[in-house]
Length: 142
Image (cartoon, rainbow, N blue to C red; front, top):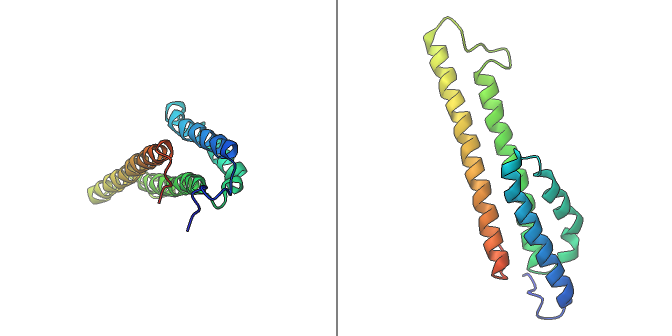
């Protein structure tokens, strides 16, 4: 069970500092949507740098939450890109083959890839918002 810091494991100033730090990392994740994902790497590095400072506290759940959100999003986004690239012939499979059935199949695969990428985007945004709300309320995330 996670300690809620009432027992004195962490000083109040350290808790406030880590809470502010988490607010900044959540904010950077949101800002990264407006920088074509270029800022996406900054909060993950920040989370890995400070995650052990929060061990045993409810704040540790926020570090883990953000790290898992990042890696699952990367994996699913890459799967979507892989499917799209395969469907468009990026791996030597031509979309412009003679058969219209192959072109329809390619179009369907591209659609599946974009759906995966879109759902990943929505899921990532949901996790950032849910985590940030929990942090603001002083609660751990599941």
